[in-house]
Length: 270
DNA sequence: CAGATATGACAAC
DNA sequence: TTGTCCTATCTGG
Image 1 (cartoon, chains in turn blue, green, yellow):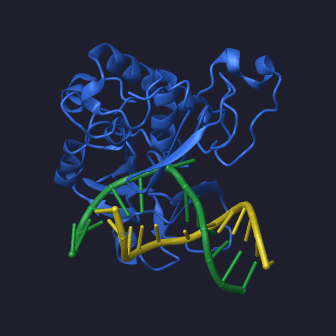
Image 2 (cartoon, rainbow, N blue to C red):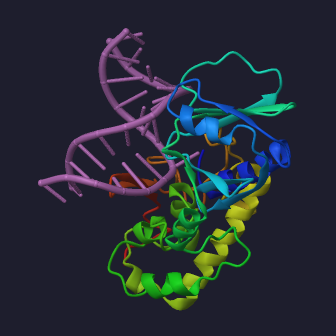
């Protein structure tokens, strides 16, 4: 679930449900109990997504910082509260709605200085209107590291995760392993624009779709893809399957402990 | 029912 | 590069 588009949707959703109201917070699991007490009774003033980080800003200069990591998940609904199931780190409610958080890698209270520090260590977020691609290119263009690793580095680009990165590289015709140094300024601007488009679409739809119209199932006479993240993609988790464009078999590799995927002929080496 | 796996990030060698 | 953390879900036996 949690790439940047998910976090941006959550920021909007949480403000809709809880903005301007005082919240009651607890931690059925017990790992956020004392902090829950500090939040209870405060009004949610605004929410914000910075890359994959979610911030709730509460009255009195106190903010809730959440990072979902690999497994984190939110659920919400209308009151009354359902009986707690599983490990609920944080539960938040007002008169009308409830919110549950499970499995985050970060769930903590922070002050303004800490939110500033967080933002300072993040790179450009393709989902933020004010983001510019130049600083990222300054780092990519002088690095020997694989391009996929550079794009996943949140201090270079904030918010893109494995699916967006792997799919964007497919669409650019570049292997995940090409060194950053080998990417031209023009190629980089194309990748950046594509990330902005794909991620903005995902914010609208709530799923990651990267397949161009001419390669969609309807156009290609193939069955639509049904799986966990739900979108139509070219290569992510499609190792051994046929490339939608050329019919060749998709490859899988490993990069810093994560799976990478590419089409050997659509993304030629070097 | 055990084991593997997951869209992430970090510390420690 | 390896290990660790967090939780749910899917796989195979």
